[in-house]
Length: 183
Image (spheres, rainbow, N blue to C red):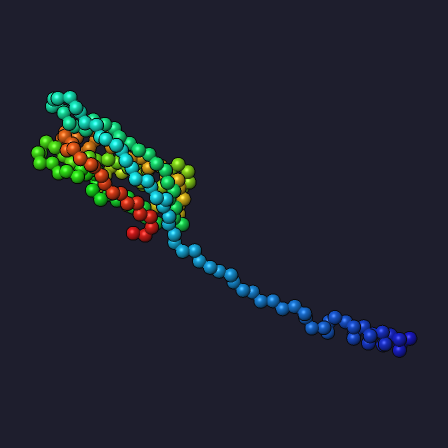
């Protein structure tokens, strides 16, 4: 019986997994990449306001601006990082292509841009920009943003710096640049 016990013990030791080497090995690795700072703005359309009405009846107010012109459009603006939004006007007013020679006349007509968010991230501090009063505007957006923005171009009656002057005949224009990103 002793011989049988020793033989079965020897067999158990030879077949035991305790003496087998491990068949597993593992290593880790990292997957990474970057996303660059990026901003995009859909191209706002040129705004044509048509003819500006002036007072045509004779009298003390003749030929003064007598209209409330406006135009609205929507476009997308997006940045994937906290950054600046700048709105800059070349002339800070609509400027006529003919300079006045009489001090009762002007070739400058103030206007404003009103910004509001239609969908997406609310924009910080753009709101209403009356160029003739406040000039250009640069604001830092509080976070990354993606917004469908409504922009209203408004030439209000009686709210411009030369309201008591008469408008010189001609074509009035300004160029506005909206810049997204680090300035």
